Image (cartoon, rainbow, N blue to C red; front, side, top):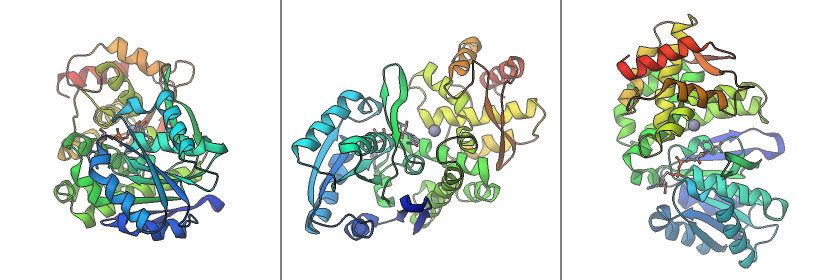
Amino acid sequence: KQLTVELGERSYPIWIGPGVIEQLPRLLEEAGIDSGRKLFIVTDEHVAPLYLDQTKSQLQDAGYMVYHSVVEAGEKAKSLAVYERVMTEALEAGLDRKSAFLALGGGVVGDLAGFAAATYMRGVAFVQIPTTLLAHDSSVGGKVAVNHPLGKNIIGAFHQPRLVAYDTEFLKTLPPREVAAGFAEVIKHGLIWDETFVTWLEQNAEGLQRFEHDLLQEALLRACSVKVAVVSEDEKERGLRAILNLGHTFGHAFEALCGYETLNHGEAVSIGMVAAAMLAERLGIASGISARTRHILEKYRLPVMLPHAMNADEIIEAMRRDKKGEGGKLVFVLPTAIGKVEIRKDVAEEPVREVLRALQEGG
Ligand code: NAD
Ligand code: ZN
């Protein structure tokens, strides 16, 4: 199944389904990347042993010259040092302006390879082959980046892929925590935009977690569609795009203060979305939504409470520093109903503290 991201000349297709990888040579041709060209696959040390050979041989059989670079797994790979190494390897392989970078992996590899593609000889073609559920999020929007010790995603660019080839077979080997974290962002796309999608996710929670392909295909397609709708209205991040941060003001603070072992990004966002719903209720702009928010997240084995006691002052301090905030104000994306959100700037501290207290005490 296919979805087109409409961006005028830079429009591109997202193909989602089992066995999409076998279509890759044809899809590349359709995207204007003809055989005979050099392709450079960036992948990580977990994904490489699982899917690199298969992907490479598909492409070599079709006449492409294929090179690759295997980076360490995890956020550490989004560094200038790893970026430089990838660039060196690409130069040594003799990539030119007509070559393409392919990201085979999750959001980390996507962001890194995308930034390499954006900057190699001032920009070459980029193709995403996402292997995590969460990467549905990073495959739309064109944001690519590496981290700096002083800030996450701080060195980056906008560079749209020519093609996204999402093979749902690849998702079967994902560790359970990564699966749950991916679903957190899928659910987020429902909560900000589309109540019928949320209902569908509630009804199909079991089948989706058994990785039934038709369900997985539909979930990813619908989640990507929401992001496409938001991003195509706001490509360079002025207003609307901020709603994609539902659960993220709280989530980033929880993530930063707990550490990745305790809470990964999706898990932190899960608790953050519950917090946002509770805050909306306390501010009187919504009613009866936190119970349903909690319920759907629990169905996907996501946390809805803080894992241990945390200092509210530290959390609030971290949220004031969040780069999306303006001048230290507390800015939140708050649900007004399931499937609808609004942005509230300058929220008072006291209701936020009440929510944080409740998140540690059992709601
Ligand atoms: P990730 O790429 O680190 O993948 C998570 C883990 O799963 C890694 O250990 C990886 O090796 C492993 N893995 C990947 N695919 C696998 C598979 N099929 N089988 C087994 N293991 C597999 O992380 P992620 O959660 O996919 O992405 C997170 C990153 O995405 C963050 O850096 C975040 O900043 C970025 N992101 C970017 C955007 C954007 O718009 N550009 C949006 C959201 C997130
Ligand atoms: Zn996120």
